[in-house]
Image (tube, rainbow, N blue to C red; front, side, top):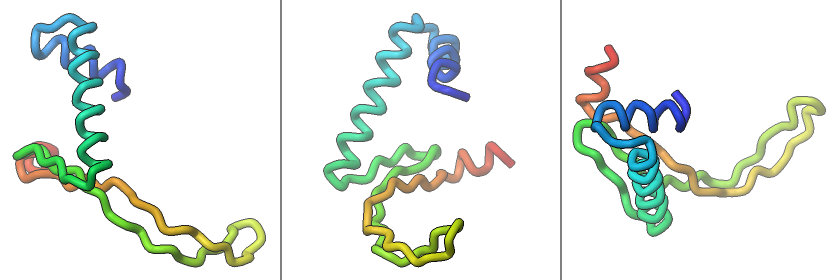
Length: 90
């Protein structure tokens, strides 16, 4: 499902116009991004939670040449599914 399909699904399930559904989805994405930038965790009970994790710098290998390369440290977004979501997909 891509963003356009998600907007269609939200509009249909919530009896909203596509424009309102797009605004709601964009607001959710913006709010989540802002919270994660601050280092906060975003938890949606039953659905799951988004958090930031630090990935340490490490040495990798170039798959074409086999030469070692340095991979810098960075922050990554993690998502952990909630119990309701986990049960719903089984």
